[in-house]
Image (cartoon, rainbow, N blue to C red; front, top):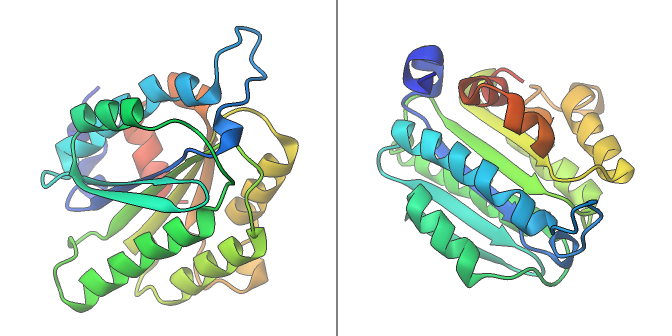
Amino acid sequence: MDPLLEGGAAIQQRDYTLIIDKSNDMHMSSSPTGRRPWDLMQDSIIRLASECEKLDLDGLTVYLFSDYFKRYDQVTSTDLAQIFLENQPSGKTNLADALKDAIDNYFERRALKIAKSNGETILVVTVGEIEEPERVKQIIISAANNLQQDEELGISLIQVGNKPEVTKFFKLLDNDLQTVGAKFDICNTVTIADLENMNLSDVLINAIFA
């Protein structure tokens, strides 16, 4: 199905950002096949990126994060395949800095009136136990409290693997954000396994209507 048709206006006129974990946890395999999470997620994320780029014609913003993050602008799905080839997992799972930079960048563009009319969707892909989870939570709450409307910013948390501590934290962000101080619920969660079986337009819609 074509997300341009299935998703309707809600997923169009938005910017799309991918924030991808390249920490050492992405190197450590618990799969029966012996494949690393870094390898397991690539086909699904490139497929998702190829749908996003149909909607975000000036290219995607992509972050790779571990101890530090690297940002790539105006990325296509073909570029993303090359980016994966050029990077190998190492370091800690420091999501907070990359997420803050992406959110700050959105608000800067909004202030300059150059953000897309329907806002932004941020897709976070990670396997590891996140460093400074409280800081990550506060960054998301602050973002939610600076929005003008609920659907303006959506964050989809895509879990690679099944680490219970990661699942628990993501569920808190998905289900309890407003109970811990956020004006809007802007997060939803999905696993990389679910992603394989989902209509891609549903993934993007769910990121907006968390």
